[in-house]
Amino acid sequence: RGVPYIRVPTTLLAIVDASVGVKTGVDYESKSKGPLKNRMGSFYAPCAAFLDKSFIATQDERNIRNGLCEIMKLALVRSEELFSLLEEHGARLIAERFQGSDYVADRVIELAIELMLEELGPNLWEYKLERCVDYGHSFSKILEMVAEPPIMHGEAVNVDGFFCVILSHGRSLITTEVRDRVRNTMKSMQLPTFHDGCTEDVMWKGLTDAVEHRHGKQRMPLITGVGSYTFANDISMKEIKEALAEFRDLGANDTTQS
Image (cartoon, rainbow, N blue to C red; front, side, top):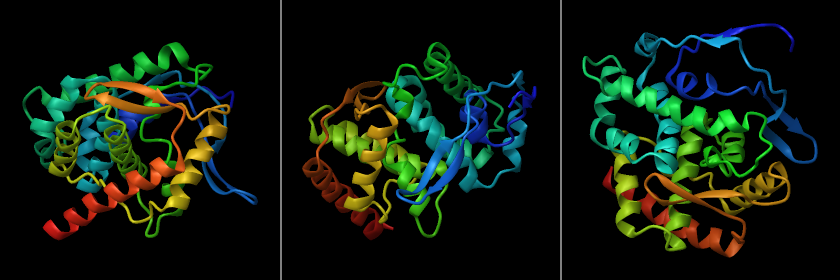
C-alpha cells in the first residue's frame, strides 16, 4: 500500500476483470469458518492499466475460457449485445485466441471493460452493496476454495452463474427458452455449467458467507432476461435444494451426451 504501480494484465481474465477494479485482496484460512476468498486486503487503485490483447495469444484454451466466464457474467446481467457476440462467435474467439482479423475480439473486450467501469466507477469503494457484478460470486467463493481437483476462478463463477440461472427459472423470472439459450451458449464455448462439489452444505455456506459479506442481506443478483437483473433477499434452503435437483439433472444430461 502506498506504492504507485501500473497494471499490465497478461491474461484475458485480468484484462476484463482485475484491470478495472481496485481490490488488492488475498485468500484467508479462518480457524472457525475455513477457507475464505479475498477476505483480507485493501482498496488501492493503480496509476494506470495498460491493456494489450496480444498477451492472450500466449494462453492455453482453458485459461481463455476462464476469462470468458467473467465476460459471460457481464453479458447475462448487462448486455444482450455482448451475449449475442459470445453466442455467435465465442468458440471462434477461443480458437483464434482473440487474435482474429475482424472486429469481434476487440468489441467483446471493449464492451466487457465498459460495463465493468460503468458498474464499478460510481461505487468504487463498495458503499452500495447491491452490485450486479457480484453475479456468479455468491456460491463460487466457497466452491473455488474447496473443489478437488482445484478449479479456476472463472470456472467457479460460471458454475455459480448457471446455478443462478436455474434459481431465476425456478422463480419464473426467465422462461425455459432463456435458460436453455444461456446453457447452450455456455456449452458452445465449453464453459462449465455443473460441478459435483455443489452440495447443499457448500451452497448454503456460500449464501451465508454472502450475507455476512453484504451486511446482513443476501443481495443476490438474478437475471430477469439476457442483459437484465434484479436482486433477491429471500432465497431459502428449500429453494436451493430444488434448484440443485434441476442443476444435477442437467449436469447428468451433459455427462450422458458427452
